[in-house]
Image 1 (cartoon, helix red, strand yellow):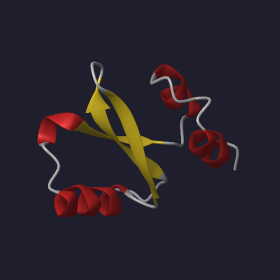
Image 2 (cartoon, one colour; image 1 turned 30 degrees about the horizontal axis):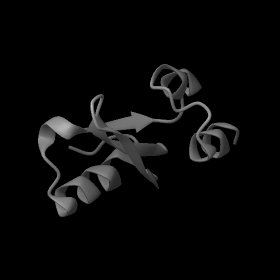
Image 3 (cartoon, helix red, strand yellow; image 1 turned 120 degrees about the vertical axis):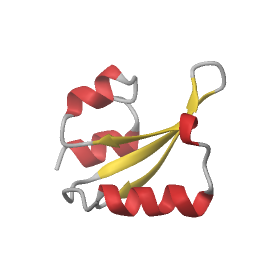
Length: 73
């Protein structure tokens, strides 16, 4: 199913080992294509929309340069 185009990142990892951000992607579909191609285990990824800066704040990425640059547009 096609999802609305919006800038998002893929977050991989877990609380014990840390997280990594990949992207940005211009849509959920592109992010899901990347996840499928990377063969990432389902339980270790999240697609995080960047239209809501509060998401970055809650996830602890508000000070990340990529988040600051994307949410300031």
